Image (cartoon, rainbow, N blue to C red; front, side, top):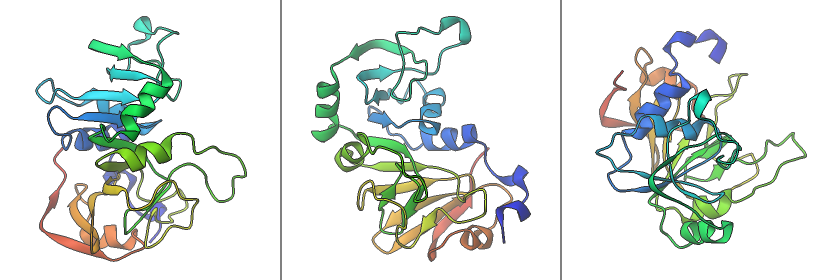
Length: 227
């Protein structure tokens, strides 16, 4: 099966993935958000969760994306996108920002991924055919966070699975990913490999397996992702 043959209206949108992921962030966590899709997560946390979002360029207490009239050219996240601050936020030196990450003070990092392996290895900084790229601080954040949530599409545009048995892309960090949130499913990384916990509405476990290049253990509580 190729992704083109799967009804695209059954795949979760980027915002739907972010909403589902946000529900798994525990109250009072300090959470790093990677560049791109992970920043959408700020839109879906609740006040009761009281999450402190961290951006590696030196924001501790990042809020949701601003409206166009509230954009401030002096306030941007690590991906150079406009950002906002929550009450009590701090802007810190880059070295202090990474002291937080390297010191084990990140409860979770939400990172985009090009590929994840069944043992939790992460690749998210360069595609094999691309001679350019820079790993930046991704390896420090992925290694330093207590949990790493990978947020990504399940397959490439050509239908190739991004969930592999072993990495074939340049490595970011080893054995770090604890959970994967895709447009098809929510999958935990366990000592035995991938475990399918939830599927997007209308997508069966068999379809998810067909787009996953490693065996999937099926959770005893397998269910559909709530709308």
